[in-house]
Image (cartoon, rainbow, N blue to C red; front, side, top):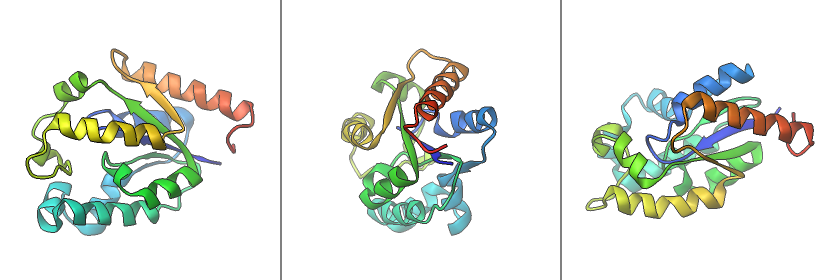
Length: 174
C-alpha cells in the first residue's frame, strides 16, 4: 500500500487535513514535524534557533529520508522541498499531493513565522518565501489540490476521491 504525502506552505492544513484524511481512509497518520520534535526533544523554532535555517533543513531532510512508512498519510514540514534527496525518497514511497493556497490565504492563516517554526532566512519576507517555495512544491508534486475557499472536509473528499480513482485505474499501488 502506497503512502499519501502532503506538502505545502505553512498554514496550508497539512497536519489538520492529514489527520482527517487518515481517519477517512482508515490509515495511520505520520506528522514529520512531530517526528522531528520527538527525535530532537525541542520545538521547531528552538531547533531553527540552535542549528540555523540551513542546519535545520539538513536535519529535516535526514528525518524525511528515514521515513519508512507504508500505507500512511504523511504530513511534511513546509520546508521539506529544500531537501532534494528527501523529496526523491518521498516520491518513491508514495503519491505527493501539494495543498496549494494563494499567497493572500497563506498570509491570513499565519501568525508569527518564528513562533511557528518556519525556516525563514534573515530578512526574508513571507512573500519572498512563498515565491521561492511554490515552484518547488509544483515540481515535486504528483498532484495539486487547490484549497482556496474550500472547507477542510471538501478538500479531504477531493483527495480521497482522487486517490480512489487513481487506485482503481491502477496508477498507484494499493
